[in-house]
Length: 125
Image 1 (tube, rainbow, N blue to C red):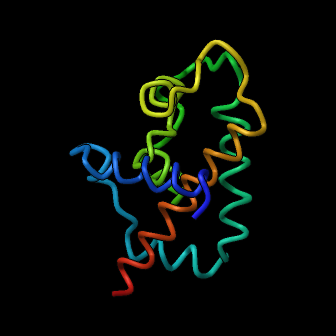
Image 2 (image 1 turned 180 degrees about the vertical axis):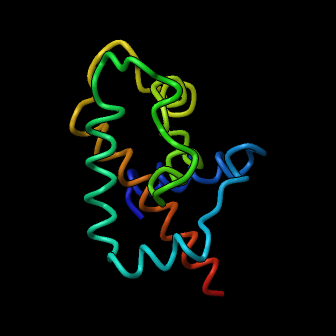
């Protein structure tokens, strides 16, 4: 496991210790949606949501821009503390006062996808 993979696993473990963050789980409907659309499409959706709702420096409704349901990525964002700039700073130390970099966007999508894959594996067992 390389250092970036280890970083992802470490943050996922820390998030599991949070009562709030660990309360989010994908439903059977979410998992069926992911299987129907394929992970590559869901990853594209994650990039779209992050670029529109999280990447800009100024977000008019920051803290309220990510719905609690409606798409598996939204659930994953809450579970991984990638739902708003405040949570990004608190959990991932990504500053609020500037646009996200491409590396940060890739990191966020990696965290989201890793969490979803783990959820799917856990539901399959």
